[in-house]
Length: 507
Image (cartoon, rainbow, N blue to C red; front, side):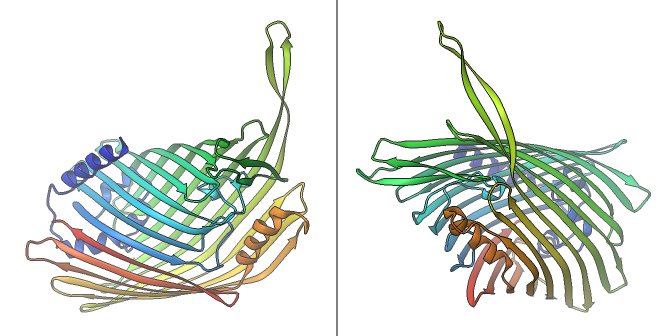
């Protein structure tokens, strides 16, 4: 069912986007679509009403991509040592005088090897309420991503609606075998209003629903596995053995977000982006204490962008604040009628057992310095990071303060029928202080929390190189290729990531 709908959606996206015309060459249009030089492109990602004001009339791109990542031991406990992704994507955008249609469809197949201590997906959204075992295994993924929407100009401003849906299935190929199905839906309504002749103010609200159904089963006769159900104070465990036993659980949650933007319509002026998001996901462990994880995100971006006849510059301040709270609910079932065997379940207590916090503050300067066909794009970002976590009834408490410095440089050459770009970026992350209070005799702490702390608090050095070329063809379409690599060094080890993308931009 999802495959048929996905294919139909792809055809609709391509058909809608290929209508209309604009005055930009196809290679210039492709470059502009992926550029963050116009502030509106960067700030309109989650705001459907702002799509009406993008500096393009239409855009269609079909691409395939692959990524190979080798983490070695430089990863968090729920991640595998190696990760391989192969996928495809279709993007469509079409605008006329008062209406805009846009859509995106993507499909990815992934394989993650040597996973330990995690049977679930989207660990960052579940807090401490994950199910795990100590057996090393490989997991295969299949993901469908669909999104689209429309905007319409009215005398009262521009209205926009959009929706996105992610369907994902994953399974492990070794006992104990986990199989999970994820459904992740979001709906956004937005409104944008001109402020004077050169600025826009925009407001949007988002509502979403998240579901993950997990089933774990062992097929080998006589095999016994110990499954861990993690909580804010430690863990419960349960034996899973033979070919008949299995365990299933559901993660269900709701989320909402509110965003406000103030930005220039052109490429010069002040801009502001604020976002508040909240999500609560319940871990419905069968016959066990129910865990509920609530996360909140606050994002603030503000800055100024100005230009000269040949150059453009931007300075911005970015701040984030994220919190997560894990609360456990304790119930007891009472018999209220012995004749009919009627029972009633009552909530006895609830306790907040887990808390985490992440904050960052950074200052970024970026420029586009043009001389004839050449453009140099220097960028420098520096900031501070704060991370803390606490299991409140287990002796586990951390606090990490870090400094990040990230210089980068882009070089672009505009040919008559093509554009070539090389981007080089580096980053240093240094821990200025860290504190740890730990329970040495807790197995879960030793196998999951302690390695995570050691990796997060380690000094890290990143370097990344990416090259991209867009070439116009004789039929006025264009092809593009993008390739890159990234190295991470920490604790005397090196992790690598390489990627390749091939695309076709239709006129």
